[in-house]
Amino acid sequence: GSACRCACGVSALALPLFFGSMSLLIPPQNFGIVEVDLYRSAHPNELNFPFLEKLALRKIIHIEVDLAPEFLRWVDEQHIELVSLADVGRLNPWKPITEEVVVEGLRVLLNPDNYPLLVMCNLGRHRTGTMIGCLRKLQRWHLTCILEEYRRHACSKFRLINEQFIELFDVDLVHVPHECPPWFHPATTPALRTTSNEQSERL
Image (cartoon, rainbow, N blue to C red):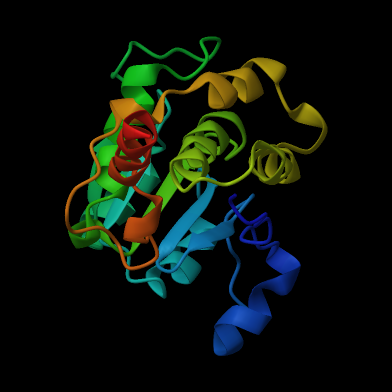
């Protein structure tokens, strides 16, 4: 079975251990390291820009309706490509993330040419947490570990509807390309699960 892996989210207090000389810089709210060169956070403000510049981001996925003008200017100045998923599935502040948003987001996350990459939404809790939760499911994490990571960032604001979405998300909807980021190991791809099922049917 899959190993239970839970310790990828990183709190702001632990950041000096990872960034050394950047310890005096201010990360965005709910910032976390998901995998190598893959980060998550709430909507950054101007105090966070120097910190984010150290990450040398190539792309930012945002899953929210409104973005601050100063953030848009900063993204343009840094030549970072902004991938908007706010209009996919017609999101609004009261609507849970949609299947279309997650599938498109995972398509971007599985392309190694898009890194370093940040996934963000307004507070970095629900939409970002659901997206990352579905990524963990694609990585074959145990559901207990997936929900623990989701709740660590959502704290007392966690939503059962998002946890149910993650639990029921069909990973077979996601096309896993031949070339993936180095941390996404081929042994976790849906294709291998299909092969295993086919072998079982032959027995």
